[in-house]
Amino acid sequence: MVDKSQLNKVYDGKVTVPLLVSNMSVGGVLARDANIEFLDPNVSPTATFADKIVNPNKIVTVTGYKLTEAAAVNYDIPLSIQVPGIAISSLGITGKFTADDKTHDGKTDAVILTRELVGTIPGDLVSLIGGVAHFEDPHSSEELKRVIFDMTNASLTGADAGNYSLTSVADAFAKINKVLPVTLVDFEGKQRNASVYLYWRTASEKDNDYFQVERSQDGKAFIAIGQVKGNGTTNVVQNYSFTDGVAPAGTVYYRLKQVDYDGKFEYSKVIAVKADGRSGAEATLVAKPNPTPGKVVFTSTDAASGPVTLILYHSSGRVVVQKQVEQGQELSLDLAGQVPGIYYVQVQTTTGKTTTRVVKQ
Image (cartoon, rainbow, N blue to C red; front, side, top):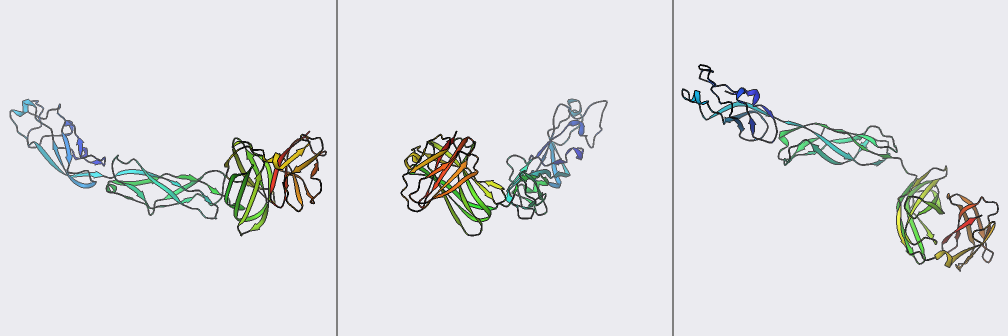
C-alpha cells in the first residue's frame, strides 16, 4: 500500500511522482517476518498518472518496487498497484502587464498594452486575457504612476489553462501627462537651397504666445535661433515655418519651445536634418561689423518688396529688440546698450525669414 498523501501533488506538467519505499507498506502479508524487510529499499518505485490534467480524483498506478531476496522466498506481490482518489491540484501563477501613458482626462482608466504570465510550465499553452486597469489616482505627474490590474473579469485561456489558477497580477507603471496648451500635429525639416526649412502644424492652441526655435549640433545642447509668433487660442489648424540660414554642415538637430502668455513652456520632439553647410546666411544676409561694439548693418540679397522686420534675440531665446524698417531704408541695429555676448538677428520679409549670428563685444 502507498500513503496517498505522498501521491497528491500540485500540477507540474508531468505524469509521474517519485516514491520512497519508506512511504510504502505491504498489504496482505506480515510487515516483518523474523526481522526481514519485505520491500527492497534500494529500488525506487514510481507513481504514474494516466495524464497530467488537474483533477481531484485520479487513479495512480504504482510500479517499480520489489521484494527483498529474503522476502521473495516466501511471498509474492503484484507487479503494480492502482491507487484511486489521488489529486493533482492546480498550479498557482501570477501575471504582469504593461499600461499605456495617457493625457490627463480626470479619470483613472488605463489602457492595457500587454499581458504576461509568470510561473507557467515551459511549453504549456496558457495565456492571460481580460481584466481592466486603472491608475491609482487621476492626476497628471512627471513621474511614473502606479497602475492597478482589476482581476474581476480576467481569465486564463489556452489548451493547458485548466491546470492553472491565477493568484495575482503585479502592478504596472505609466504616466498621466498634463494637457498641453498646444497640440502639435507634426514638426519637420528639410534642406532648401542654402538653408534648412522648418515647418510645423498645430491642431489647437490655448494661450500660445510664441514658438522659440532651437538648434543643436549634438542633440543635447540647444541654442535659440529665432521666434515665431503663436496664434493665442484657436481650434483651427495653424501652419508655421522658419528658415535657418546659418545651419552648419552635417546633421543638425532642432526643437520647438512653445511658450504660453504666462511664461510656461513645453518642448517638442527633437528632429534631425541633414544640412550641406552652404553658407546661405552670407549669400542672403551679411552683418558688418561682426563682432561689433555697437551699430551693426545688415546687407540682404532678398529683393522682396515691402517693409522688413528686424528681431534681435539673446542667445537664451529672449527677444531684445524688434524693429520695422521701410523698404529702401538702412537695415541696422544698435547694440551699444546690450551686454556683451552672442545674439541672433532674424530678418523677416514678405518672402521669408533669415537668421544670422552677431557677437556683441
